[in-house]
Length: 91
Image (cartoon, rainbow, N blue to C red; front, side):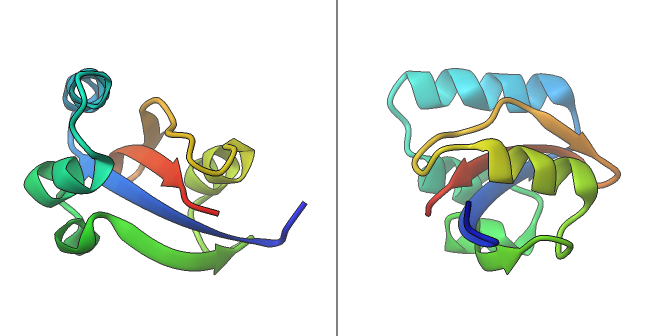
């Protein structure tokens, strides 16, 4: 297992918002489009891209979820002190 991955995320305040975004993904919206439209993180403007990061660089629940995803996979809502994230592992 690699010690560095590349991932994107969408950050929202409420779990229901994250759940709603999962539905939008299932309806065919792109992750990047939704990040641009809905993410509260500045990374939303670049499709949610967080670039490459290693272990210990992100808050624990986010890191655990991101490293468990397969490349191309999107997580369900992940709660951190910042809000709720949908995480897409790129590589």
